[in-house]
Length: 100
Image: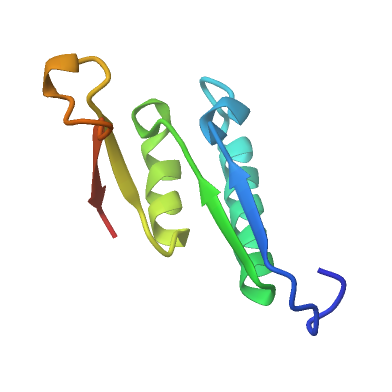
């Protein structure tokens, strides 16, 4: 990401992004997280970069979740069958659902 002419491809993974956020974030912390995500999106757009952020949506503030959905190009919901072994089909152990 040295310059705009850099043709390198970057993959950025932010697993368990919700763990970086306190359990009850203040309004200022939420605004800081949203600012970080906007800057990250701008960086990804300027370069040959793909970014995957995974979060446990149900434990986040609704305002933050709405902003995550708004800033994302795609939103996927993953449902795991790991708790229900009788439903497992071969190596396939979950479902994907495109939300946006």
